Length: 139
Image 1 (spheres, rainbow, N blue to C red):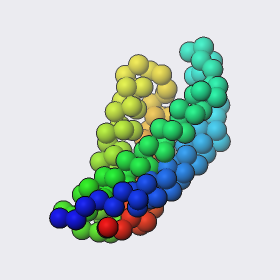
Image 2 (cartoon, helix red, strand yellow; image 1 turned 90 degrees about the vertical axis):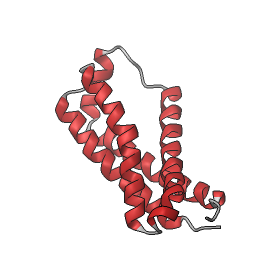
Image 3 (tube, rainbow, N blue to C red; image 1 turned 45 degrees about the horizontal axis):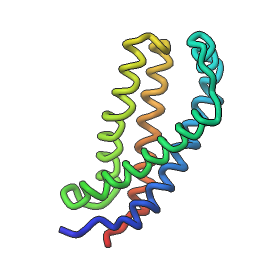
Image 4 (cartoon, rainbow, N blue to C red; image 1 turned 135 degrees about the horizontal axis):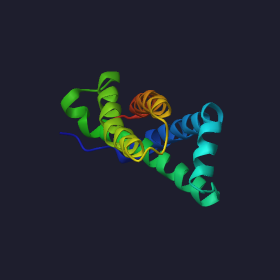
């Protein structure tokens, strides 16, 4: 079994993370802006630079995780888009689904908005895994 090419994990992960950030900003600030603002006001929360940096960092980490997972399962599943989609779905289940289920259980967002976020998140993670997986090459 070959070793993971960490340089390519970082390269693909950063590209995937940038795509993930663009997607997240698009969803939160353009499509769900009013709803997000209403929840922030209801919970008496503010969105400052510290929160923005945390979100950007988390989304970069998500991109890196997608490509690392792709590289880790590639020997078993083979290279290609199918393996990238498997990595994306697994990552989505362990990130988005858990987080959104928690928000749903506390009634932070309306169910409709959580469903939109879940579907958007699945598409987002799949595209990120496909991009990052496409850039990944074995050592």
